[in-house]
Image 1 (cartoon, helix red, strand yellow):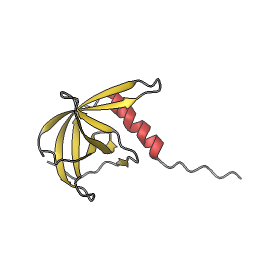
Image 2 (cartoon, helix red, strand yellow):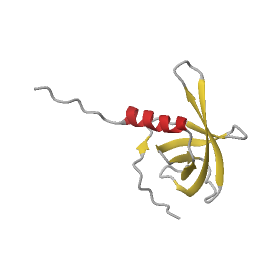
Image 3 (cartoon, one colour):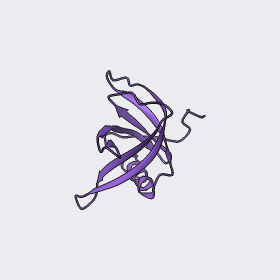
Length: 119
């Protein structure tokens, strides 16, 4: 099993909560995202090799919540540089289109787009 990341990641400056899909309890925050995976920042270590049902609750333009459900497998988990926190990498099983749209929106929002110099 490959555990090294080869896909460009985008760090999130602000945290989006991640929930257990079945219990609706928060399990951590998004640390970074890619088209096929995500990194979770949590207070507890996560079981490596286990499958998880995750839920993202995102605000939409109308002030309502958009829900994105994800099925994921934990590939790795280790202590964060911040004491009492853990970083965990997940691979996603068939992420929905809404997740792809989130990744694109975050990439656009957090990327630096230099203006072209005018002559």
